[in-house]
Image (spheres, rainbow, N blue to C red):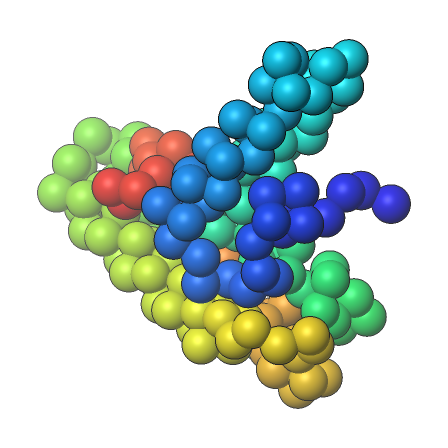
Length: 169
């Protein structure tokens, strides 16, 4: 089983951690893993800390880590045909805008996908943000479904030239 990134950094298992909280926990643990203190295990400790920081700094990975710990058996409901049809149509239009060089349309699609990403993050904060040991089955199913949708919006942003999880998107 992969190490728990929250335990590795000494953080609570919750989605609504700030970048500052993650960075501060990382720095404290890195100081403790310094070779003068940790001896021979310093290199392995530093690698584990870097992996944990990378996983928790990425909101999608952090949400997946929370669910893996607090609701490991959660299953996503099927995506609705309406959602899939909308995504197909939007991606086709964005692809056409990109291919034709229509920067105004590309910017509109970029804003559209970024708004949906922000809504997903907000929903995950309310669903997975609490400091409890588990997530009830209903909330977990919603969170897994939201994560499933997130993939579509991330692909859309990549399609219009925004790197995955870019903060300015």
